[in-house]
Image (cartoon, rainbow, N blue to C red):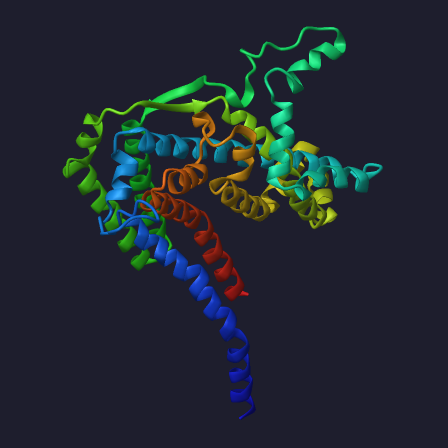
Amino acid sequence: MRLNVDRLTALAVLAPSVILLAIFVYGFIGQTFYIATTNWQGLGAIEISSVGLQNFEQLFVGSGLPFFRFREALVNTVVFTVLFIAACLSLGLFLAILLDQRIRAESLFRTIFLFPMALSFVVTGTVWRWLFSPRSGLNTLPTLFGGAPLPADQWPWFTDRRQLVTFTWADASRLVVIAIIVGLLAFAVIAARRRRPVQALITGLIGLSLIGWFFLGGAFEALGKVVRPAHGVNLAMFSIVIAATWQMSGYTMAMYLAALRGIPEELREAARVDGCNELQVYRHIVLPLLQPITLSAMIILGHISLKIFDLIYVMAGGDNLRVDVPGIHMYLTAFRGNNFALGAAIAVIMLILVAFVIVPYLVNAFRAEVSR
């Protein structure tokens, strides 16, 4: 009887939170999915009808500036995510290794490195907008040593219009689909070797279905016939990466430093006794033990990069195509362009991208917790 009362009490306590979560989170997510399949053009729309997946199709293959801008925003997001994660992990690990040497005033340096994380992205964007102003800020540093300021046309920072690599959307789409197919088939092989026949069968069937649709169904040729404006890796994105790395590298430093302090010194001493130098100690002992921390940091930083909005909006404004991202494009499409259906479709795509990053991590963490 006592057990039933405890269960009822727990359910009664949890029920309000579960109900509110179901309504204001998952309910609104469901409503966003529904809006994305309509032609809702704004609050003054008289009639709203369903258009299926037309909005999603237009975003990826439609012609016109709004659709080209979305695809450019996706490319910018991929570039920003890769550079941002790589820079934060590298700088954070470097700072953590330095602080792990038990240097003097370690607490002071640790506070200095962590301080940017206490700021909001709005403050960070404002500060770095001043620093990256083409006619002031960092461009005037040489004048402190008697030199001439850097020319604004060669160092425009976040207003730079130059591109490192250019490619068409058709080429990128082909590459992504081929990568997905190869990944699915590789996962099926790995699952089969680990004696997981159900996972291997399902993944293999999905991969083979994509092969049939892509190559035998004519999708590969159809993509090649579609003429699209060129996209590219914009140099302006490097300014955003620098500002974001400045703020978040202290976070990765703290994670790595905590992990380094948790590694027993006996392991390092044993490696040194076996003839390893310091570089080999880090390569064969320290870095492998830091892999779980690296994965966690990559998940968190990837989540931040995929939904970033405020830093870029404050630094470069909402109309800078060279640093546009899906979050900004969704905001402008829905609330400035008054196209709520298309804005909802962009929001759904962003949710799917974030889910691809977060869900596997949560599943793996849940399995590890259960196995304990």
